[in-house]
Image (cartoon, rainbow, N blue to C red; front, side, top):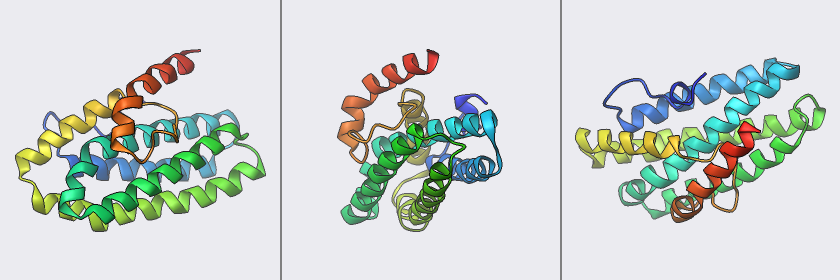
Length: 185
């Protein structure tokens, strides 16, 4: 599956919340697929999930969070950034484990619960506030910026930059370049 398909790009004028909701659906689907797969298929599906989550969280932190900070409040934005920073740490730990091990399965189950709870918090707290604050045109502009940010986002977790829009803007492009070379090798 191409990164554009995975990231939810479906039309010429993406609306940021619709794109993010589509990605949340894709994340849930990938969790289910990883849980039911074995061997190389499980590794491949986990790699797809890892890449989607890394890009998705980067896009949210760079494009959505500055707006949600104003729309939903600084506390909501900071809480979501903190959850994403923790998720990046766990994702990096999972990446080092054998996907066919019991350790991976146990840690992955905890990670799934945390990620799905995080997505639910965004959908209930953050997304409605951003929609209420922004015009349709602003939401579409944010959607375009989100997809652009995700295309140049890292494909692996980078906990040192996670949870910080500034950290993502500064370290993200370099980390993405390193990740793409790493993926090619």
